[in-house]
Image 1 (cartoon, rainbow, N blue to C red):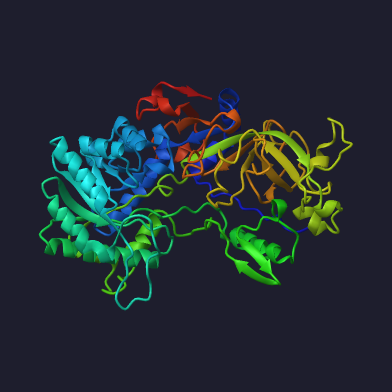
Image 2 (cartoon, helix red, strand yellow; image 1 turned 180 degrees about the vertical axis):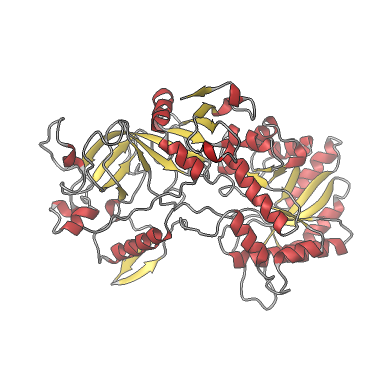
Length: 541
């Protein structure tokens, strides 16, 4: 039998301990419903410490601004407010949330598209504003003058960097002012010296390429030199986010899976996806075209390690390490990690409602064990007629004895679990309702995960997922590491299905206590979490 194409999630000790707490998780889901989002506030403080350690290693100072857009959780933001972290807000609501969670304006930066209300509160509160365009600068300065406010700290977001003699351009961005237009932008700042104080420049690139970011960082250092030559006193370079997360435990699984996905697109192996979805690949007369539209789920250098590697790179044209460029000019470094700062900080639970079989491709039986194991679905997606009774043997639902993989319907939908929407392929963890060992182990199964909306498109996974055993109604599937964009970024109440509730969980003992891995878990509703208070007042299981 072929080895199942697992994509097992990377689980560090704290999150792994939570997923072993089977009774605790079922108690939470039983009382609060499915889907249910669970966040681990203490973990975000640990991730912050890892980023700050990189700063110390390179002898740099500056702010670490959590990109709030990655998650709406009050518990995570309040936990950060109790540290030395800062926060990056990209909407009026996020700014209000940050202020209400304990962040003072000195530790808040307003970024992204800004409507008049957002700009007004930023100006009124004294929040630093990352300026996206000359028009935005004019609007902000007008607010400061109209209401007689103190001068407001600003940074200038730049884009379109290039380095002389370097055959690499940073990709086009809808945000920021082109580096080539810096002179005109600085003329605007000069006109508004009475209203704003220029404290730095920055960029935010939608790329994982360290080479592109090196060009942009060097460009920002040169831009600060230009600012100083014009009489300004800026002191910071903001390099945004994009530090990434390593979602998978085994890089070899990722390599094998993407290889087989390519083979499926070429037609040299059975399909691996619902209705032959190819994730951006296509077969043109035997030639592979397109590109995988997926997040690189295995990133061995991610998060704080990515920042460390970036700062160690030589500047493209000046040659010295990027950290050295900052240090020799006494410039501060600002970062805006989002996904990386909430790595291992959350899990989404979904209850299994129904498990049934799908048909084989073209309504025919699989021709061999390979096809049966990988499960090719019917072209019209209809379930196979079955003469099984309600008490059918569990082996009939393994995906190995039937003509196709299982179709597992969850009490959640694709907007509740946004992994695939953001291009992240990773297997869920089965959390059985009953203790393991109560029934014979059925072995690995192949299944598709469907949502609770009355839409054909509501597939939580468009790929065939391999699980070590078959789920049953009442079991939970735990989708690990969803806190970065995949938990609540797109959640809505389509068809009046409830949006997932959110809870914060923690364990007794200090974070560095080696004996705490399987200590008791405690919880409260996300909106009721406040650092240092909940540890002695809320529930446990």
